[in-house]
Length: 476
Ligand SMILES: Cc1cc2nc3c(=O)[nH]c(=O)nc-3n(C[C@H](O)[C@H](O)[C@H](O)COP(=O)(O)OP(=O)(O)OC[C@H]3O[C@@H](n4cnc5c(N)ncnc54)[C@H](O)[C@@H]3O)c2cc1C
Ligand code: SF4
Image (cartoon, rainbow, N blue to C red; front, side, top):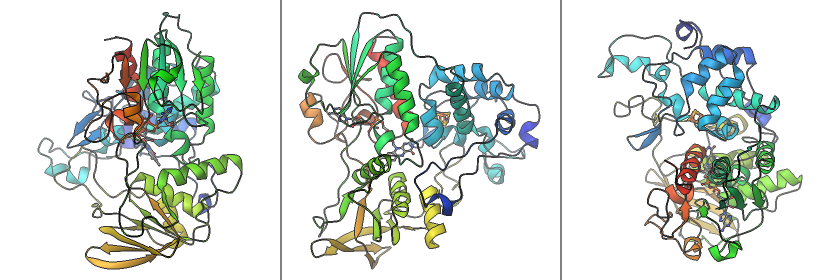
């Protein structure tokens, strides 16, 4: 285990991001890193608990807690603390083929399940524990992970895959995190792997959903080059519309096309100009940032209203501010979450509490207020040709917001319209690809990631990609 007593003597410290005001003026990455010495001190806080909840991803009360990948967290924390960096990295890579992405964008359900996240003020109310404990702040698991993988790339410890060919071939359709993880594992098993991706760059939502300042795209390019050196072939700008289009017969085909059908809102005025789906807007923004060009749709000088208070909406807030929006408002249909855990939501469940993400912090710094308005149901878009106002019921009161750009960030309702049918696989009522385990209704065809489980997280996509590769290869 880490350092004896460190859990009681060393406080949790995370890397300070660039300040909200300064970072909101550019698209440069805002994450900073601790020094290696400080990161080791942080790792030393890990108590190597007898029953560590952090590394066992479980669904409790409908939400994940603990790492869905089963990362060997106490082990890599201890090795990091002891300075055995390479061994720590190897432990991490056993379960997570893409830690540079989870290390940057994972909401870290592991840290929610960490023993050290037990809210001590509620301790006396917990049915199982009645001993007072000090210093209740989770270990910095995600930053420990990121430190290890970045050290691995810097020092050339992450060697390309050199598996002996097993004479079998696989096609992976979609190069999001599920497809990338699946391709890596299949290649490790000896398959020759082709990835087909309809976009001009691999990465899926890592590339064109999550903005550059949160996940710098060089990290994706670096991993893709490593995959190419490992013998995996990418076929970009290649949209697969039917399995017969693949041009050759594969031993296994894995469908990882994501959950690309955005939820729409059919209210009066929906057809007005200036109302965009969030991912289309974010994609255009990232393409323009990478090309150093002006985006064709921009928030510059506009009042922007974002429908949806979740992560996608938050990315839209941050992007609109960087493009020079005049004002940003985020309408959320749900109630404002509580600041503290409610009694019905005890540790180690995912805490259903208010989280103020980076975009909302930036809006506060720029405009002096949190952009979120809760219990807001949009009733109408108003305008002549283009939208000029959004009318919403806010906790029973009708309100009007000026808006020359409206972004719909209300989630997704399954794989892109018509895609499952053209691929010949069956879907569930929720529009996801139906599977038994990871097998679809078609022989030799598998599915994983958001396409199978519905809109989710990068960490789940990676887990599904790994498990699906095992299923496709007939491994236990
Ligand atoms: C704006 C936004 C921000 C997010 N932020 C976070 C975050 O911070 N942290 C987090 O954990 N999760 C986040 N998520 C969720 C996360 O990105 C997804 O859960 C994850 O990317 C799903 O991975 P996937 O591989 O299943 O699908 P995707 O990432 O959607 O990849 C699917 C790929 O398939 C390709 N494709 C589709 N159809 C075809 C076809 N016919 N032929 C060839 N290719 C095709 C697509 O172009 C795409 O590249 C975010 C999601 C969004 C929308
Ligand atoms: S992948 Fe996510 S949940 Fe797993 S250890 Fe890393 S940050 Fe935690």
